[in-house]
Length: 239
Image (tube, rainbow, N blue to C red; front, side):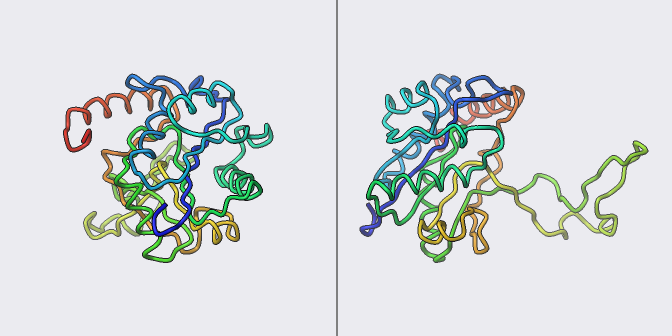
């Protein structure tokens, strides 16, 4: 779509979820949570196609209702608890290329990322191309220096992971980042060779921490909804 490049979004959304039932289509602040990702992809305006990879007819139906495509059903062997994101995206790429698609860039957007914003998706695309990298994905900073982190040993006593940093000031320690769990960009040809978004030359899109909340448990879900509700009162978030 941009500069004659073929740009595809793939949203992985399997049907099974043990900790949060029907997680990928559970209502989140008034709409199925996957719809937030579909709408962000549409708002970005850079995708030739927005595809949902799922093994569920119910998810497929909702995805189509809100403007995404479901050109294939994901096989059962790629829809259990142990299959990683890369395997799902590589499967989607293979299916699309076998159907004659010539894809230049691909973006995986998680179905449970209600804070994902079009502006950061676009930013990731530009960063990926400007750096001629294999991949680019969203990250954010830890709220506390990881080099001052603690563990509980076998005797139920506290220990530092890195005691050599005990006397060092927090502001003098290097910043550490973690995966924000929102989106992952890749140069399709390079990705097919490396087969992982955590590539050797991955570059970051740094998100503010208030736009990042992992959603794995019911408690995470409640926390995310409260955060989202507060952000909805901020005009800069809602646009």
